[in-house]
Length: 110
Length: 116
Image (cartoon, rainbow over all chains, first blue to last red; front, side):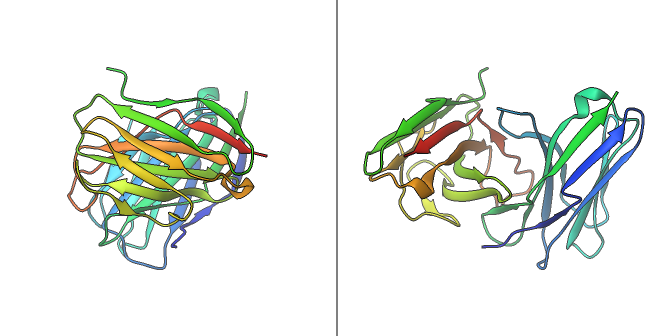
């Protein structure tokens, strides 16, 4: 099965700093989704992207669908303690399945 | 609106035992999915149901069976549990099948399964 390469694997940042993470695939995708997962909970959808080049914001979060359609980026500005969690990307190509990245664990130090 | 609910939250089984994980959604979604999440592996699709009455294998279907009981409910069955099936299982639903645009999946809280 296809796995997406998500980096970095983990991040430790100071409160107030900006965060960037990305996801790459060897295949072209038509949809990219970004999720956040808190401990003991299911993933919660943050942002959905449907077109190459698309840039979408959700509050302090901004995500982009890469022009090559093989990557996507998520930025978090001015991080706060509640941003702590694991962030997952998910991509879909021509089929019915979404493929998930291995996650970026974010720790925000107050 | 409860969204996607899963039962049980935790389960411990012995090798060879069987059990069924239950999932229900109240969002009138057409499509439902079962994933497993293992450390360092992300989420992997086990089975999905694009619409009521249909089911299809995902990436890792071996050792599992599913039933789309009605539009609301999608169950996952382990007939003979193995230690390799120790994992966290998530159910998800979406308004439309993945092929359609605007397909966004909503996840349940998960079932933590340990097979001894």
